[in-house]
View 1 (spheres, helix red, strand yellow):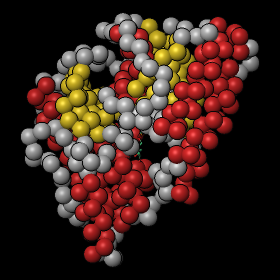
View 2 (tube, helix red, strand yellow; view 1 turned 135 degrees about the vertical axis):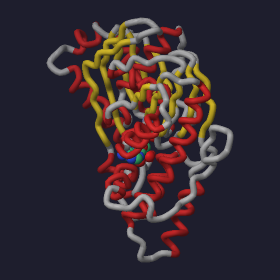
View 3 (spheres, rainbow, N blue to C red; view 1 turned 180 degrees about the vertical axis):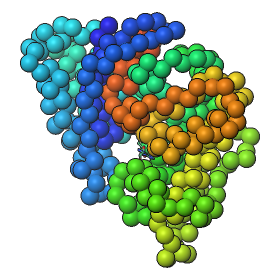
View 4 (cartoon, helix red, strand yellow; view 1 turned 135 degrees about the horizontal axis):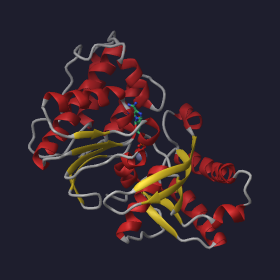
Length: 338
Ligand code: KG4
Ligand code: ZN
């Protein structure tokens, strides 16, 4: 089936067209188009995402992306081939989510197409499927984005349970806040990663919050505060060392908790999805730790364009919903959970 998907949960306007096939034991995808219009330059002067600007940009960009996708075809011919439309309904910035939902509803009505909602976090969860990832179960999954840090136990592709999450800041949020403390531009994650390459990760010993606790929850606000105090008390600190040491502390906690969960689950696969999974140091550190602990599991981390927000991952989530027979309400919910 052909799926047209729309994603406007934060600061990327995204539309994708996919062909999906196969059942729940092996869903397959062929990406025909995956268009993303980034709003980075618009939000950069403000040091973070401004919801009303995001909303305005989504409204402006969606028809442009759709026209680009339709290309030389007539809209009639283009829509005649679409079997299902999907739009992200949450979580995210509510004014931004509504723009996608409203646009998708109008299109679905005009072209008489079935339309369903999708959970953005499930998009990140299923992102490895887009690259043909042959997941084996049981599996563990770690979702690390700007708003979430979640650990899951997966019995199979559609049966999973949240086993832990952050109690305060998400790890991506922590990257962004530390970047601001270091006076780096938005978005902070990639900037910290770049600066950290020139620094010594052992230079400063930042706290690893909750690393020894038995549960699978996380906490990152204390780490951010530790960086704040360190910078206040060490005016001549090398920023690259701060970035590298902060990054190592954050990644250490993610690895310790995730591998502990993977062991307990007896995971054959470990999925890591979301914007922070784009971090190469994180990717290498996870691979090294899995090897060191001699875990018989395969690591699934999508390539960069499927880690950060896009609409192809939303189509993947919608197809899993479709196979399960699950329908979602078409109303934006900023705080939608997994
Ligand atoms: O998944 P995503 O694109 O959007 C949300 O669903 O939130 O994640 C965005 C987050 C931001 O906090 C951003 O700073 C972080 O992912 N991020 C990174 C990197 N690239 C994006 N964090 C660390 N290293 C990166 N290379
Ligand atoms: Zn995301």
